[in-house]
Length: 76
Length: 513
Image (cartoon, rainbow over all chains, first blue to last red):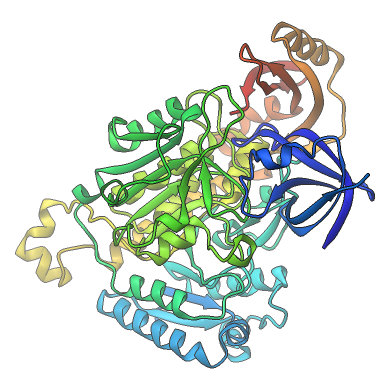
């Protein structure tokens, strides 16, 4: 599936054992997904840090509120 | 025919998944039933999609595999007709679905909580977790792989269950204990409670994920790390840092797990069953442990909870499970006793307690007894052996245990209260106190949540009448806020005030881990 939206940093899983800071995609439709790279660390992935604040287009699968990206590009 | 154990599955789904290879699974199930018979356990395989199987129990066949209401009704009908001592669900969630419960801790990222808890309860179908506070059934799930088409995985697990053997308790006294470094104090307390010491605990960092054969060879594993959905790893964390190094990996478990290993994992999503295609073909840690010869895995389907210090929620229910296994319980009874002991700690369950009860479940054949219980002296006498024709446990003794567990579950169902979200604002006086506490703790408010605590009618009868008045108007108001620690890491802090008749009777401050 393809998605478009803005990448923001948020605290997720609030109050749980695994609460943490994460990059979240806020899609143009208003949906929010925690971002993760296929094969990447789901909690902290330096490769994705550069996406913070950017508007991106990406492809991936959604599992339990996480968008596991197989491809992404920054939009101008 | 008296049935001790029911294996329940959906045959048409298995047929679709495995096509002509289904015969191999059929053969493996037959072998398990034969092995059970040799152990004195009469086992019956039931297909919930079979009209004849369901007619035999006056139930309706499941025609749509994902129809959770029908699946729950079918399993309830089986349990009513056969009253089995063990209920084994055969297949992953795409064969026999979990029941989708509303997430009582809404806002934590989980839309709902997939759960096997309702199958352990006589209460009818509901998507409210608070409907299932009194589990009475001994239940476990022997999964195949979600989306799988090769029967080898499930055939392997069935073979492990058929060939299982009970071992002396000293073979489970040494453990593999693994903790995210940030939680080591809590994990050490858990290990001390279960095993009597925590000196062998490993933490990530600095350890992991390359654990040695010798380290993983111990038959009791207790793991308290981070976990994520559709991820074949668990993760550690140093105190005060947003770093999450890999602590444990499924791919490193192959041929390292000792036959008979039993695992309790507190991790978020620690026992989630997912399609391996979602993670590059690698099945999850729980699935891999079982494939490598583990007998049972107790873990969570979703985001789990624990306090910042000491033990709570996930810590406790995992300890209780291992406690029971080490004392000689079957895996299924250990899971049931863990659920019952956990909820029995409270007068009412708050949202995170309720989620803990719903999310933890057993993967494995529930009738397996990994650890030998210590027999009483009388059982070694000739008279006893002659009377019971065996020196160990008897079906009669098991019946007493089931009666006790049913009584405990029934009492819990009739007496426990639970918190349910409400839209009401906190009273002005409570708001002032929470605001003052937030200011004192230097917390920046993020959101507020309100809950009403309700009890079943029977909870106010007999000796409980005296508490009826004080329970009326019991509610919980939570202020969820954020605090920056001395090492500049943001931490969420929850201030919770329990109120009765407008008066705050209890306050607590819970820090995120």
